[in-house]
Structures are given as structure tokens and as C-alpha cells.
Length: 500
Image (cartoon, helix red, strand yellow):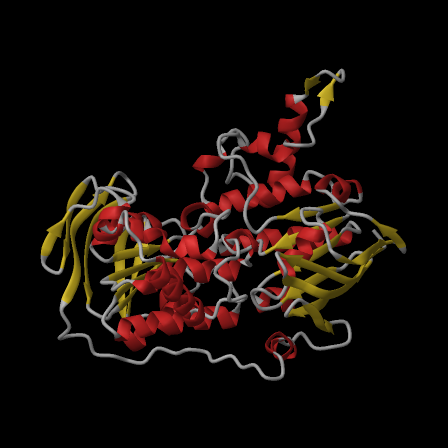
């Protein structure tokens, strides 16, 4: 594809402007970055290009010719393929079946050529994940990072001319990111254009040739690295705007030695995932769970929230032993979870913001059948204001919000309750700098009010900036505890890798 160009592209959802006037141009085999705060229109623009959403305004040109993209089929015919931020895989199918789904080859024009499909799947996976994923594995048994690799492989198997990657590295480990970057550079050498949407500015400055910045549904600036330095400081002011600012939150050192123990675990074990965990969390403490992805952090949060049941060991809340057999038990006791997959585990995507906010109230015995809707409307408006949700309309469908605003709904609904323990599973994954800082300000505010917080974050920076103490997990065990000012990137990385 020699030239892809969008002019004044706009989109409205139920009267709310998601994209006002997007202008975009990518010439030849370049890697083009797209950045912007949550709700700025990046994902909406990508979905329009991929035919998942039809634009209300504007025009799209390919090689100077105006084109109509009304469906994913139209986009694929034009060579445009999108790797979704929210995976489109079918869990019950194998890896090779998912990679070939929708563009299968038939032998004798009758039967699917499974031999060819398996060979093709293996070839594309070899570039991204050699020896890590078997093409015969069921997708449901893969880690989030492996699922993301399969999603990317599925897109590459369609031989795109323009590949759009929407937050592709959010679930990946470092070595997987390196392989993906290598593959993207190879695509450029093969005259394939790439659009990379990312909140990680180091990725943008490392990989991209040019960057477009979206703000409030408009294209507000462009940085061309062929004539400008690869400097994040050229991008951040465009993201924020003239009247904006980013307040990078830093934790304040607090002495919690005399604080009461709220949560205690004794020899908690879960199958072969968690082994003999002993843990105490004090009132108002922000406890971090560090380590490489997949070392048992998520399973531990699931145990604490009642989603999973321990196979051995005991749990105590404020000195009393508790047995959590269902998430409802945890909610009633004041233990709340913000899950890692907001769409799968955290939200009803076809329901309104209001319905998603009030849903946890049905777990409360006193409110299961009679709800004061007038009061709940007011509470929902207060929560929307507190988490800075944009647009601030409780009647909007959650499915029409950006990923960051969806995360604000998942987090914000717990603000209507008095929480004893707040469990956070990588809560800032896939959201921009400002939204991330807004979220962690709320977390620290809750901690100062006495809520105990258990935080797993894949970003060491989030652990450093927000935790009073970090416990490193490795193969389902606690291997090191790091406290206060000793929490630093070098120590976290070495401990995670079991170095030194």
C-alpha cells in the first residue's frame, strides 16, 4: 500500500462524539504511531479503518482513490487487518484453528485443507513465539500473553498490506515484546505499513517513524522522527493540551508498624499454582505483588476474592477466620476485586454505566430486592465525577466507552461501599498516563482512609510509585520482600529473575 489517508473522519455514539475530525496519513512502508489519552478516539479510528464501525463523517483514500469500508470484509479486501486490544479468539478452538478462522483454504473446493492450515499456523508462530506455543493447544489454556501472540499471528496470516496494532504489548513479557518489535521491523522491510497504537511512549519513540496525536476526537499534532529527535517530551504536551498537566504521583513514606493487621494468610495453597503462602496486610497498607507474569499473582487475588478456593491453608479477616466459597462472600465482607480482564470478568458490555455500577448491590442482603433508585442515580453521578469519567453520562452503554473509561467504571463502582480490602489485578493495563495517575490517586486516598490494598502490576514503575511494600512471587511462592525506599527497579528486576 503506497498511501493510506483519512480526512475529517468522525463518529458519534448515541449523540456522544467519539471522533470529531481525525486526519491521518501514512505513506509507504512506515511504522506510524498513534497516541492520546483514553477517550481521545484512537480505538474508534482503528475500528473504522478495520470496518468494525462505520464512520459518520469524512473520507478514506488508498493510493489516492476514495474507498468505502463498511465491514471487516471490505477492509480485508483492501489489505487492512486490525489486531484488537480486546482479543477476538475463540477459547474452545485450538491455536491453529483460531489463526486460520475466517480465511480457511479448501482442498478440491470442498473440504478445509487442515494440513495446509496447520503448516501456515506453525510458520507464522515460529516468527513470534518459537517453541513457546503449540498449534494444537486450546486457546483457553494459554496465558494472556500467549493469547495476544496468537491474536497477532492470526492477523499476520492474512497477509496484510496495512497492519493496525491496538495496544499489542499490554499483556506481553519483555522477551515477547522484543520478538514482536523484530517482526514489525521485518514487515516494514517487506513494504507492509504498520499503525501502532500504544500508551507506552518508549515503544513509540523506539519503533515508529512518525507519530500522530489524538485529543478529544481530533488529530492535534504530528511528530516526524526523520526530522525531529526521538524525544517523549515532543509528544506529551500534545497529548495533554495547553491547559493540561500530568501530576506523576509518588508515594509518601508512611510508618505502618503500629497499624492493625486486616488480612492474614497461613500456609495457603492452591493446586500447583500457589504454595504455602503466609501473608499479613496492615490497615491502610498498599502491598504490591511483584515478579514476572504468571508466577501466581493472579491466582492469589482470585483466592482472596472468592473466585477460587484454596486447597489448603487458612485466611483471616480482622482476626477472624473466613471461608470464601463465592465472590459474593468476599463482597459482603468488604473485600473487592478489580479484575485483570475488564471486559470478560468486570463488566456487562451491553449494559449502561448505571447498571454496571449498581450491580454489586445485589450481593448485599438488605438490598437484594428493594433498591432506592433515586439515591442510586445520585451515587452513580458522584462516582462518575470522582473517577473523571468521560463522557459523564450514566445512561451510556459501557461497550461504547474507551478501554480506560471502562476501567474507571470497574474501579469506581467499589467507591460506593466501605472497603476493608481492595484487590487490584494490573488495574492500569492499557490506560494512558493521566488516567493511570488519576486511578492511583484514588487508590492512595482509599489507603489513607484505612483500606488495605493488594496490588499486582506488570509495570515495576507502578509498584515503585505506589506500594509501601512489595512481595516478589516466583513459581507460586513468595521469594523476597522489599520495603519502602528499598523498592527500586534494579531490586525488583533482580528479585523477579532470581538474580543475586
